[in-house]
Length: 333
Image 1 (cartoon, rainbow, N blue to C red):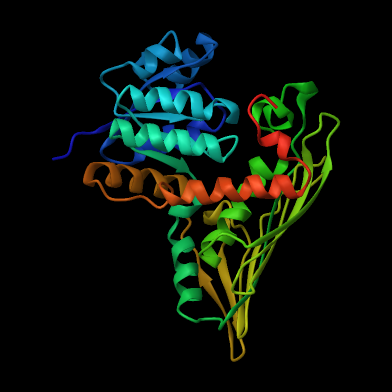
Image 2 (cartoon, rainbow, N blue to C red):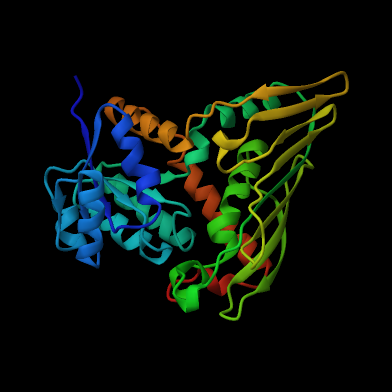
């Protein structure tokens, strides 16, 4: 029987229980064994609430722990490359939260460290592991709606800057609506179109701190397909994450393309009929954890490693350049 995957968590981020701690309790072959945070008391609180055996005094001590198999990195984006590379050099696999890095150069450095260490680094794009994601791709690639014409997707939700403490509003920590939110619509567009765009247009409105509060991007692909993507964290914006894919013979619509399990169905309309395709309510994070464990134990490739983060980040960089915000993707912005 394969050895269990033992996870160590860098930091006590808000996403950690939903993304890793709770799914690990429900999946065989995995255990969250250790945690470390800048504020040790926060790590102790999370450890006590979730039955984590060890609380380390520092990030360095965590990644040096010989009992750990994988490090989960949900730190601010500007720390993804630094601590992921350190973990890889320490002989650990890494599950790194989205978006993967500040820029494409960091992605290359992270993947070079993985290759040199013989370990793997995976981007935590949980929705890509839900079966509905692949069902939609297979349906479209099988000609279900004819020739692909258009992809429309957005992710909008108000994110308060919390008096200057919210990292998603700070340029130095990789803030910006399209980095935190827009990476989801982008992942759908790249997956549906199966390639990187040949042309990119983008425009943004900025916060007082100079990051994109709302950003719209138009991507054009060599097949003639156009993707219209929007992300907004503006005050008062309600949660919205719809996806519509239009072809020459029909459309596919998903009400929530981020938390796929929350969408009751996929609506498909063709020139002949319209029907609703049920969506599994099992959480995307459970699917991600299950597939991650299986992939590491069997050395099976995972959908969000390799080319996936490279294509994502190269296109993110191009979108920010097109919006006149390329400086936000530089280290130490």
